[in-house]
Amino acid sequence: MPKLGRRSLKRLKGVDPRHVSVLQKVVKYYDITVVEGLRSQERQDEMVKSGQYKNKIGCVLGVAAMMGVNIRWGGDWSSPSLDKNVMMGKEVRTTADNGFDDLLHFELVEE
Image (cartoon, rainbow, N blue to C red):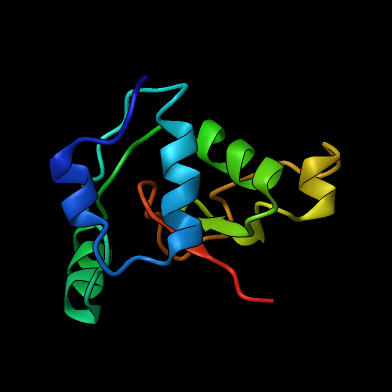
């Protein structure tokens, strides 16, 4: 059965368990590697300054929505995964309204 590798699991230390459980389910469908887990403000500022990242995101958002875990993607900061308009196809995910695209970034949205 596919699973996250040791390096990915090590990088997830300290990450919210809900977020980890979404990634553990995603890896059953796609081979993924966790590049970064918790990111310091200094590292985030560095990423913003350099404007980095490209990645596929649909599976992570879809699995999170199925699991009822509200995740926001760094390519569309204004639309969390459980946004009813997005889930019903009434709204298109877009990077057009972003000040910064962080396409490998996923974060939990607290309600």
